[in-house]
Image (cartoon, rainbow, N blue to C red; front, side):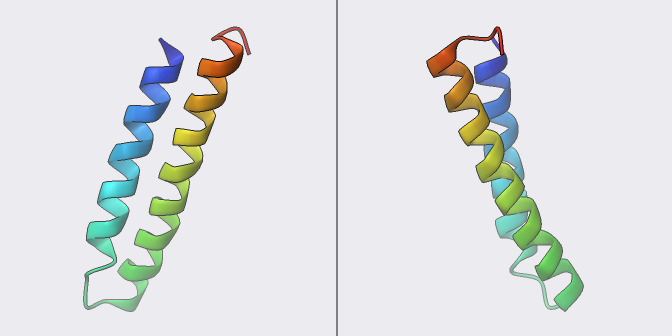
Length: 56
C-alpha cells in the first residue's frame, strides 16, 4: 500500500511543481522546480518499496 501512496504523492507534487514553473514570479518558479524534484523522488521511493516490499 505504501508503494501506491508514494507514487500518487509523487505524481501530484510533480504536476503542481510543473504548474508553478509556468508562473511569472521567479520565486514561484523556483519553488515549482523543487516541488517537481520532490515528486520525482517520491516516485522513486514508491518504486523501491514495490521492489523490496512495504517492510522498509
